[in-house]
Image (tube, rainbow, N blue to C red; front, side, top):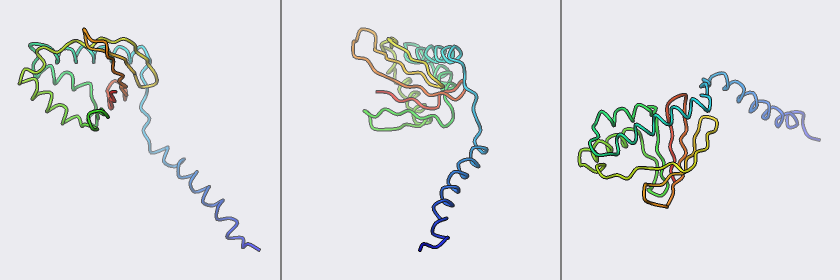
Length: 151
C-alpha cells in the first residue's frame, strides 16, 4: 500500500506549480495595447523616419529620429543573415554606413500587404523596381518597437 505522502506529492507539486504562476502574474506590469488605428499611425511615422534615413542627404539626426521608435532593449532578427542584433549595434552600423554614403542610392521599399494584430504588424514589402518580397514582423510595446524579425 502506498503511503499517504506518496499520494499527495503529485497533488502538492501541481498546486505549487499553478500557484507559482498566479503569484508571478502580480509582478508583471501589463503594458496597455494601442488600438489598431493608433498602431498604424505609429507604424506609418516609423516608415517615414526609415525612408528619411535611407536616402540621399540623410543625416545622423535622421538616424536619431528613427531610433526613437525603438525601445532600449530592441532586437532585430534576420535569420538569413545570422542572428539577432541589438539596438546599439544597429545604430552604430547605421551611422557608419550613412557616413560612407551607403544610403545615397537606396531603393524605396514598397509595402504590398499589411496585417495588424495585437501589438504587432506584419508587412510584405519589396524594393522599388524589384519583384522579390520580404516578410517582416514588427512587435510593439505601446508606441515603441521592441522586436523586428525579417524574412
